[in-house]
Length: 484
Ligand SMILES: Nc1ncnc2c1ncn2[C@@H]1O[C@H](COP(=O)(O)OP(=O)(O)OP(=O)(O)O)[C@@H](O)[C@H]1O
Image (cartoon, rainbow, N blue to C red; front, side, top):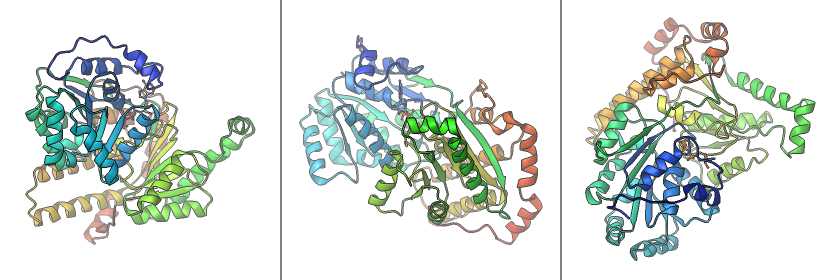
């Protein structure tokens, strides 16, 4: 019940097993859940695939009342909702795809003040509507507003890579319902972003329980492949994926796969491209070469996106690789993704970490390859400058625009440094970016730790020279882009 410190004796391990079908808590999940059940405000920062969602879902199941989950992306909501429904948990969502009749039924359930819904997923934009706020007041008056959970909380901060202005308005919750506990979850917050989120939401730093866990994902192998515009890197990728299929075809492995009804070519992966045109062209090219691939970007119809996503999730033949723009990022939770490839330099360090984090969510080894070229670096910087100039021209007075542009530029620079660095473990570099004091463990799980000599050589041979790039910049050769 909001407003009271709770001393409760739920058998949360029992709920974990019987409702969520998991055997044990992962390290720190129990502590986070216990703090939540004690009525504390919680800030949870942990690696991709840590299992942050469970930390607000489990309390919502054992506690009385409604948990409102604020989430920035439809794909993310749908992913979690499907899993909760499968576990027979009363969950609802109001978003742009909710049918009018369903929306009406959900609102009626909420308006009664004693909702049967345990978890309600909404967008931050929906939280700004008067109607929803009125309904929340009714539920609160009935002392049934159990918790506000904010997923991907870095979207609150203008210093964050995915800043969404509507997230700022979430400051409403602590002002209006100071006794209702909050939980903020993110995988990607620097110290500055963390502090900004806490201040924006009006959380009390004296009582807030902050859990910051390592960003380390030891089962991910990070690798940079150096490239230049001189040479198409498609052949490099094709050779690599065919090599993997060939290794699976050797007799013992193929017998093993056949016994578990797995296809030789079912090596699920994601390739991230920056622009829709590349996304479509690459998926088509791979398909022509006999590799099952489908595009996924904001320009596709809902039914196409759904078909491509569902086929990929179900390991359907012809759907092994999703070639996606960043429309396919946060929250994708398919356990057996064996590789994530960045076809070009992503726009931010956090975006890179988030997207790479879709790989190896079953804890088994997976590889994260980034193709890095200095021409792409210059294109990315030019696009950022153009975007900056456009926003200034529009005299956009929206809060946080300038801060957000600055932080995007800093983040891109950090990512460029990461790519150019051939003198340090990649796991360490990622940890350092997120301000971790302890160096993460790397068991030959990056290109540097595996073979530093080969890495240096690859860089020397693979990249265009700075002189060449500078001439090209002067000629305006990198001023092109496309739809994302
Ligand atoms: N205790 C557990 N035991 C086994 N699996 C778990 C446990 N907790 C969570 N999981 C599973 O781990 C996967 C990742 O969880 P979740 O999607 O919550 O990650 P996340 O921390 O939000 O990651 P991201 O930031 O990358 O989206 C899910 O499939 C979830 O069911």
